Length: 441
Image 1: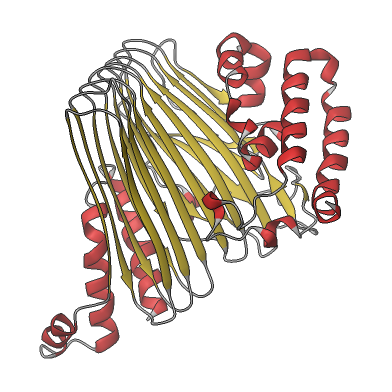
Image 2: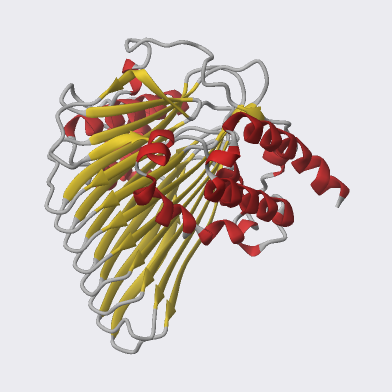
């Protein structure tokens, strides 16, 4: 108990300071939500390896560091400073956040169809709380997740995207979160809300990157609601600095005949935990989850996914691939749940891993929980190394060994990279991944 108090005391002090600055008397419901979330966080404490869901991921390095709330005013940046992280062309609407807070000077909002709302969460809480409040009120996930509780207690800003019924947005929307240097270890809690009404279509790019050399902790939560007969392509790029901590939770709810496609790429961070929970809550809904994680050095990357089939005639496809080098480690825990009434479910899940070093490790656990009897479900996992025959073939044609290893490793990733449909994103991922693989060789 003493350790728990020591680990959480700094957050209690920071919370009190936040409440004084935000004047909670102006938003009683929000203050009550934050207060309840903080109480939940203090009750739970940081998770430990004694808990099954965290058995292979030790977050003690996060809990032991006295992080302070990030300062949005530090390190003034220009558009040229952030150009390496802008993944879309000029037509793209881009909303930029520094240390978790909206930056108007770095953001670019292009023409948007009538009724579309795109702004910071802080602005949405002030001007469109009727849209925001129901989702935040129902964010009960913090009762059983300490990091969601911590995010909810400290949520001050993030992205709010509202797509009304019958709206198709051709160009992607980029939500860019950048962390800059701080004199002390800092933490940020971006909270994002994407509401897509019926018969609509949109592509969302959510990316995280570190610009400074100081240590920081990003704890983000993203809620996505996909309406009837709507489609959402969601790209999530994680390129935090090598000494950063990144914890994220993405929760998706789908209505009838909706389609959600997730593309997750994880390259940076010292300790990373990404959770993706999708609920297929309408007849005929479908989702595709694609993930690629690349780790080197002492990096630890953990992916937990859950696909909950609650209605009949739904389809899910999931493929995650990992590339691990040096003494890096990874976790994949994928769970598919088929409820009793979810007949005619079609679900497929696979996790494939490539170990480039004898010292790298992967713990993988694809799972099926089937309560219906008329379903078609498969799952599996593989762990392997580069094929020596293929290496020999390339070397026999004059390709140097390290270059051959890079080519074969990149080829392992191409199945997932080919699912990226936005050309500027695909090009930048190719460059980042090839440079990363070449350096690791």
